[in-house]
Length: 330
Image (cartoon, rainbow, N blue to C red; front, side, top):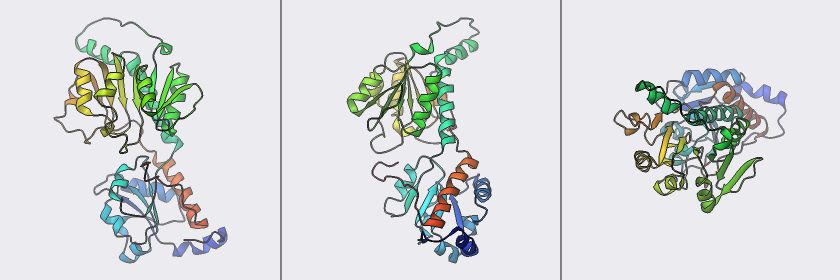
């Protein structure tokens, strides 16, 4: 590991001998070249290359890698890897594939990603709040009928997850005039948000929620969290937005709640299987809006700058960025 006493000028002298910095992605990933270009622009003193460009000697020299759902075999081909930086906020797949590895895993924490997610949460909350699914159906039926308007202050939004994404979403919703409730694994305190935690807190929040927005990470504890029992805790006529991970919601339980009209509508951006198979019920269900995992795409430019800062601190000072808590899985 680099010595913290190395000066910036000394670091400059070492640049030609630095090992390459590979970008590893899933086989056939279409954006590899775009990511390499963005990362190279942010780190002109590094040599950013796809895994395919590494020689056997390069693979042995690599200590840092940048990844986007990489092939585990490629990671295993770098025996001296110390840490890797994911360009995604979610790392559940990495953790599952690297559970026997001691490599330090860093996930992306990007304020721009949080702002993009907050924008999406507000947009689709408004979509539900202003009865847009119902008006779309009325258009198909050529039916001219206005629906009763409710003020934003009369509709409570419940956020599952109060991390960086949840906090940004809460602020956006508050500015639009919605009362915001929030639930997290451990108790949080956010200005103007009624915060809950624990099993009893979840039940209390769900009972008041008109639109439930899921922003939780996928962990062993959150898998299947939104099941029939918890959907039944929502008031009749409530709606669901899932911008987190598909397996957090039990899909058959959701279908049952929608078919029974206990839930009015579901906006789903994530699914247990992606891309969503053509024969999946969600495509044609009249109370479901299907999105192609597009609610908060990573911004390559801002992500590359964050990765560059972390790599620079490691190269110059030997400082590892804060890593994923493997027990919490985020």
